[in-house]
Length: 194
Image (cartoon, rainbow, N blue to C red):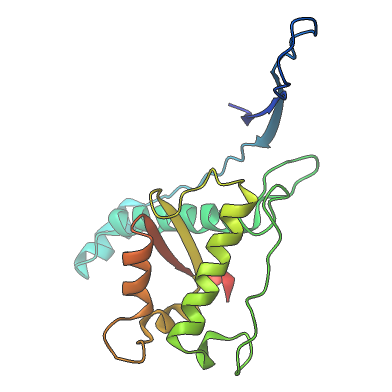
């Protein structure tokens, strides 16, 4: 395929009070399409007979290690595109951090120690998470049910350890609170968000 096309349907219509003589108000929909280009990459390997023999003398599987390097180089490239997209001419390949249809980043509320989780308590961190989830739920018009649906919370890698901040009674961490409050939530700590 050359592109990925996502259909977005906006439903229209409004019910009106019934009367015997008015026209029936019809409901309908407006289709829209978001298009994203597909980007292809390739990576290969070459191993020579002599090279392979010399590597095997050192107990190294030359072909296997090069195959792993190929897979890793492709995975790194895909990861970069997943976060930053791929801009080349008229290409419409966006990443997690520059997708124009995603809502803009909002900074969490400043606590007594600022906006960094390093200086925040259990209550402040869980409040930040509740605020973010509530904002998402509100922006989606209540169609998102965080306590019933699966979703991913992406946080900076440097913040991951603060998910183990304990409450005042040392009986529950932020991570345990998330699992109890939002059972479908998956936490992904990401270096690119640092």
